[in-house]
Image (cartoon, rainbow, N blue to C red):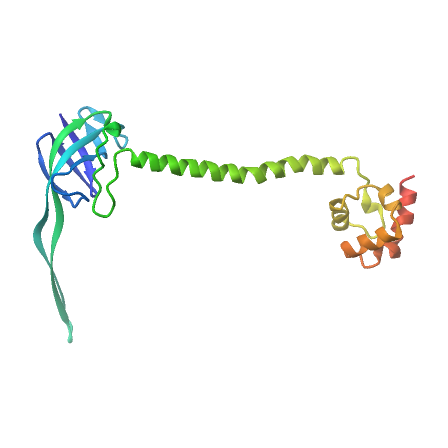
Length: 226
């Protein structure tokens, strides 16, 4: 049986017993590792990965690839040239068992490139579960203010249900009516019952600047509330 695995951004078709050179893995010679990014195994084709599939391997050695030369020359009056060699770091592995399922419960650590840290198989799933739990907690926390606002909406609607049209008062437009509603003033009877202290309080709080007395709201409210 063969499998197609992915590691280091490349894909490899492997069978048990194959010796493979792959991009440097974070492992030592003799370590047993497991490739979990399996694109195909036997007749099963992943979408994009085959769930539960894995390929076991044993690290033979950490090696370097053939030297490549990078030569750059700039043809100018005062041109320059640069020559640089490079040997890619690789890991030599021997392919072991190919598993069509159950790889997530094998307990063998995953094969990760040198840029990462090798985790025990299943650690990725645990991290994903932790991230999902954190996301659920934050979503629940954000949901509370939304629920509170939703619950407050019917109350606000109820407060204005059956309210008088305060715009009938001289000098009261939609903006001033909204301010009065925000303070719980919705009827002419409430305004008609204002004391001198309340007139002063609302006048200062809502910045009416003497409009209550100047426009005669209390007298108008008494007439309109009859």
